[in-house]
Amino acid sequence: MSAMKKKVLLMGKSGSGKTSMRSIIFANYIARDTRRLGATIDVEHSHVRFLGNLVLNLWDCGGQDTFMENYFTSQRDNIFRNVEVLIYVFDVESRELEKDMHYYQSCLEAILQNSPDAKVFCLVHKMDLVQEDQRDLIFKEREEDLKRLSRPLACTCFRTSIWDETLYKAWSSIVYQLIPNVQQLETNLRNFAQIIEADEVLLFERATFLVISHYQCKEQRDAHRFEKISNIIKQFKLSCSKLAASFQSMEVRNSNFAAFIDVFTSNTYVMVIMSDPSIPTLINIRNARKHFEKLERVDGPKHSLHMRMR
Image 1 (tube, rainbow, N blue to C red):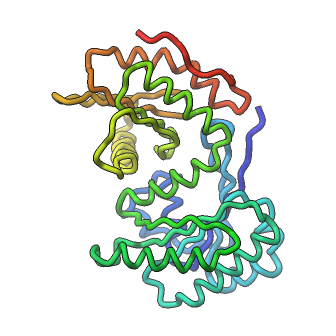
Image 2: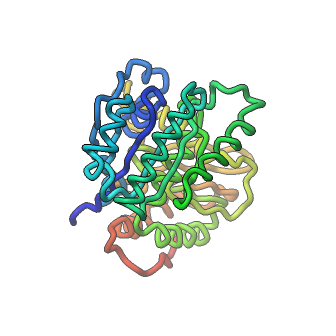
């Protein structure tokens, strides 16, 4: 089956952290290793296969002034044509905020002209450098400014740092918007959770460990648990690879619940949280695999999951 390609522009001033975040999410870097990355020269293209048929055509655009000016003049049509998503990264501690906003508005004008249906995301990055008690206020102010500047386009803002789970939250939300059959996937995940009497089920993309779908039957206290789990498991996977071992599955139990993380399809992992540990969860995961493999294909089955579980 032919791949479905989606063009994603990653833009922002030089030094804002674009290549570092790309390397952490898609190239298995850990945060401290990004210090050795050099500046991006012009445009770096990468094709990231995501969920089998979906390919992210990622354009990481160098942010030096010379390159930025070229993007809006001689390269304008090439850069901004057929864009599905624009991700613009702002260094929260930039001393050239006015210039940053000028370049951002130039991007929006080019997007409106060439790809008016593109989705726009702004990442207010390096938030770890801001005093903790000031982060909410500073982000809110920046978000209001960006939403006002972005009109008539809608803009979704995230605060991010390579040192915590906020990076995974932002990229999970962005990639979620690109998955073609996400509603069907969520319906089937909900059915699966209800059939096996799970408290919660999460679906992770296999390479990046970004959360792409979830369903919860019980209220959970930690609103950031998905991104924390993504971060922890990906770091554990990297540790395994350094020992020439591959991560397959994990099981955690205590007196209140059992959590299972296992390979689900060729492109996903699943995490299942159970209050009743006597239910044979691993067997149920195995029984659902074939159905979800078909769902990942764009032309997969249109019927929902109503299979018998043990």
